[in-house]
Amino acid sequence: MEDLVPALATALKELRRAPGHDAGWLDGALRTLERNRPDDYECLRRRLGFARRLADLADLADEEKATITLGLFFDVLIGDGTVVQGSKPPRNWMEYLFTRDDWVAPSLQLTQLVRLPAP
Image (tube, rainbow, N blue to C red):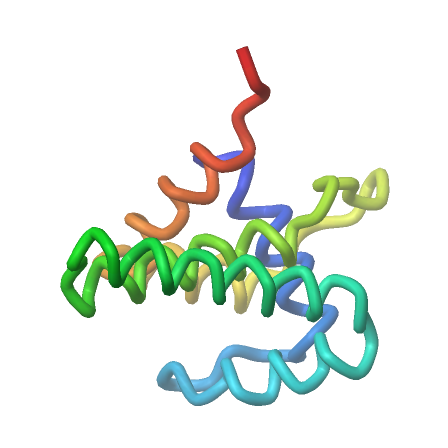
């Protein structure tokens, strides 16, 4: 999971310079994703719609649905995970992701599972 965080921090910086003090950064990040990466935004929208239907069928709790949503968002943001050689992940995003362990960690675990190669 540690290898996901630098890639995610770098991707988040492309959408929003700094995280802010709460989760309010998400709306701006989604708007930037929609504007700058429309194909990825559409992929995210389709995946979330499908995941929402499955979550309803499985009668998942709201917290579980939020974990899935954030995990799929992270996966789309990371994309192929290519990070420019020699670039350091932004410290502010790294700190934010590590200090929000209570709600970010389960979503990162899901992202890691989604990204596993097929057997």
